[in-house]
Length: 97
Image 1 (cartoon, rainbow, N blue to C red):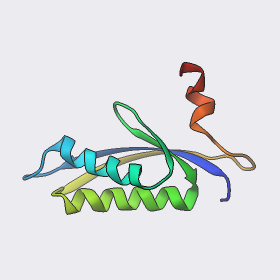
Image 2 (cartoon, one colour):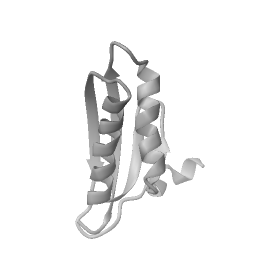
Image 3 (cartoon, rainbow, N blue to C red):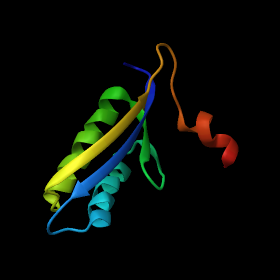
Image 4 (cartoon, rainbow, N blue to C red):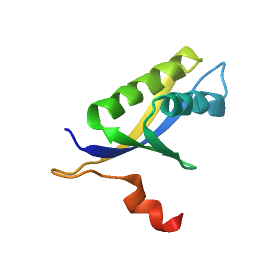
């Protein structure tokens, strides 16, 4: 897919040694470092970019959680994609800025 998509990711880590918010922060750090447009929300983070780039970030975010002490992850993902045009965060939330 060549068009931009929006993907919402919620990472729910379980760990015997690391705090939940610490692990979620590591996932968000990966998203921030990706160079893709994103928006952190209270329950999930929305990422905007081409499909393959976004999915690569999803994988790296999970790997980071494991590196920093997660024993298990529940990862909820929602994807919005269109056949012929981009999907943007701005079109959904711009009127609230």
